[in-house]
Length: 283
Ligand SMILES: NC(=O)c1ccc[n+]([C@@H]2O[C@H](COP(=O)([O-])OP(=O)(O)OC[C@H]3O[C@@H](n4cnc5c(N)ncnc54)[C@H](O)[C@@H]3O)[C@@H](O)[C@H]2O)c1
Image 1 (spheres, protein in one colour):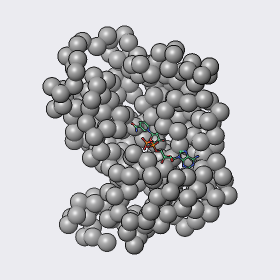
Image 2: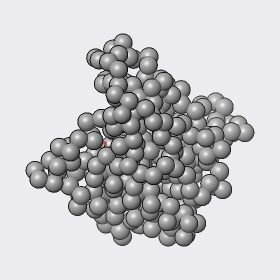
Image 3: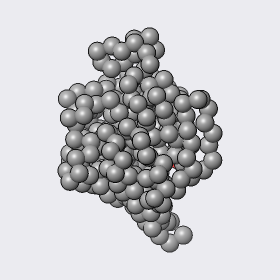
């Protein structure tokens, strides 16, 4: 435990203190690997879930090899946790059956386990691809109707709906982060709008885990402070995090960065093409 400032941050290390036991699903993945390291100083205990092998790297980490499709295994792994960061699942376009199993059923198992074990907060990894068909000229807000750009986006609509259901019906506290493009740095023109830096990823996750318990349900876009972003940043009353990175700083290194974007083209770019989805229906 560090020295607790009023904000809930440790003055000595900048981390958040008092998180108790935090479970991270999909802990072996791209985002899980980064967030896990950042949360080490904040949580008394980190329970790391994935279906692929991973190792505990500190005395406060515990590993559970679990398939999210197995409800009993998920509940057993989440016993005693104070909050859950649910990152596990299929992170891109795939056959709908796979998305329903891993993303929709998997999320249901996590929420139901969180309800049964009494977790205070569940943070769900949602996606910007829920609204990929809004045009690039439109600044999209989280409460606008979904316009998913593919089957993956549809699965995340269901993920958010499950979160809303568990908040309304069972009183869970659920925050959905519509993650942008998680990359070390932007590498393509779309990233100049959609980039989510590792530093801002950790910032959004910490803010979601530490938001007041009075937050019953919230959905926000988790995107860096990119000048060209398509999405509204979170209102401070909903989630207290202001991103610090801006993809514009990398624009000179991105090929075609200055080619004007078609304002009527879908925000999802190539993900919105029919072929991108059809290849998974008729491989
Ligand atoms: N990376 C991005 O830019 C991005 C953007 C938007 C949303 N997201 C969402 O964030 C989350 C994490 O993304 P990521 O980039 O780290 O993905 P990733 O594929 O690197 O990690 C996902 C992890 O989930 C695990 N997993 C998959 N199916 C599982 C199952 N049935 N049981 C147990 N574990 C399972 C995988 O083994 C993997 O380690 C995902 O939910 C993804 O949809 C990511």
